[in-house]
Length: 477
Image (cartoon, rainbow, N blue to C red; front, side, top):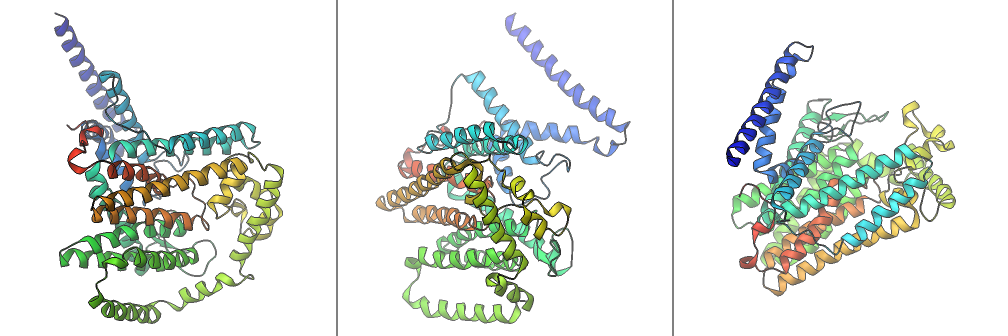
């Protein structure tokens, strides 16, 4: 009898839920929003699918990272995004599973957590002491979201995901955005290429909101593309990887980003150094000839406006360069006032808005608010010496985890896995270099890399035959 009551209750709840969805769709038909009548049904189907395969939702979030301009569901509330909805639903699924099973089927232990939690506490204290409450609490919310993403990464990225699924997801997402950027640039489609501010040159932006952030995401993918080129045994896969490398490099050029040009050059040399052992002596001459041809094609085909823009990086009379120097002056004044705990996370924009430099360099009323164009400087101003110290320690621990994982894999003769971890590490390093010229403390690729450092270390300590994929959360099983 008890089982019968449970069955009736379950069926009744299911029927009420379906009626709610149908009723919502019918109600929408009688409103000006009738075009969205099918949306409740689609959302229900998506929720049921993610309930069965929540790991697919995680990889959807990773895929959508380059699509910053199109993830937003409300222009009024920019933080309402597709990724947020998917992430919240996955968290609800995890909590439901925990309440039902009364156990945790995954392991998220890490040597990073003491430092991550310390960073959170420092930012919380700084927020409570800040004069910019709204900005500080909003940035604290973003930090909590980043921590949740770290947890989800540790839960869903198993050995198979680490070896193939994740890197392919990143590459495909960036490649699609790059293709759209090139098409937009050639055919002057404003959705994917536009004039930024008062700049005379057209800049590729892909599906991102900013050409510099777009370039940073492309650069993040390059070591992974290079890994697939060097590790693939079939010539067709090598040619595909080479084509993707050229295509994404072209998209970087079309962003006209001076920061990207610097980081790309450094990263290219690091990729060559990382894979130097894979070069066979008989191929060195061929590679040098190919590199020479590529340089000549670059000089011939690249628009003169791009080269002129790159030359201006050392021109102190350039307005953009002068503005970036002004960030340092404002940051120094702010740091002297709050050196230990800072002015509150993410408050540099507000501080700069009220400075004399904002009025001097602003091209319009909305141009007063500016980032520091340096993630480390943003954190220093936001959470002081304590905050930046812990943040740097987090980066050091993550890099050390990658290094240990590489050594462990090589010790067990798993050179291919060591090379893959090296590629993930180079992607991480590319962001760390780019952060010297870009403000993006909550970039998902940053926190993805931090979580991957722990996953790489854990996998390197576990032989493949001992690796129980079931330890990672998978409702589909």
